[in-house]
Length: 264
Image (tube, rainbow, N blue to C red; front, side, top):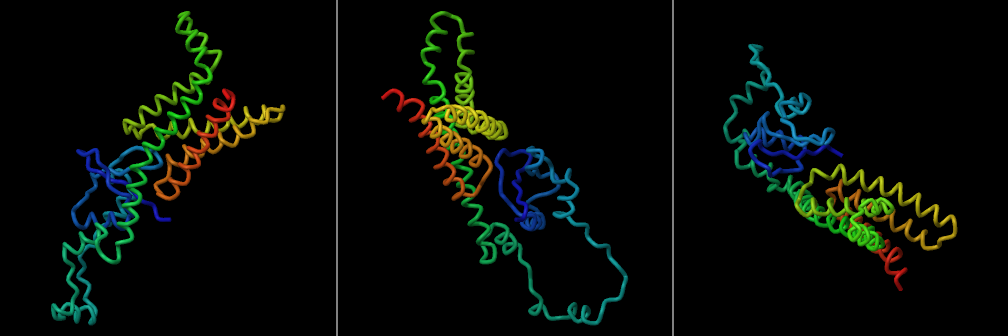
């Protein structure tokens, strides 16, 4: 799959894309970007100017060949002498239409971009909802410890239930996501993978020692972690919806088996 890039101008916070290298070349030819335009470097997860990446710069702004006094071949001379009607004229509006995906040849690119924008638009509220459910699921069973810590003024009691701390962190994640702070995505993915490793081992150990509900909690925890991780890295709309359903289902199941099932 060809590498795609998000771009934005230095004085704007709104990004555009994703664009293939070929589309960036088209935009450069139409003077819609230059070497000072910013692109998102997925390796460093930071914005950088196109001019700072020599490889990308050469692809988008190839060096023009120097003029040569070498005699033209006969067929080239015939082309120069051809009638204007025989030579295809490249119009600026046609070039811009191709860059925007408004031509028959590039319509699929525009359609793909529309669905990717939709995926990016729903990823933040989906992830925020998942992290809030996770926080409530982790904190609710330990409400008595929180009340005791607040009434006695001894907050060291909370250290007896470390999952309370994880729940508070998840609340902070949820707040940041609802505020559209996408810079936390790398840390969110780390949280998902650490949670996957810890909860998978913890519930496996309990199930191995005879706790039948722990098997369901193990499966739900895996689904929840995968849902959060995949929704934070993909822009494929169908793929995101699928794993959002898996993640929300896993969190709902985890809440049921760890809280509701024990209460009733």
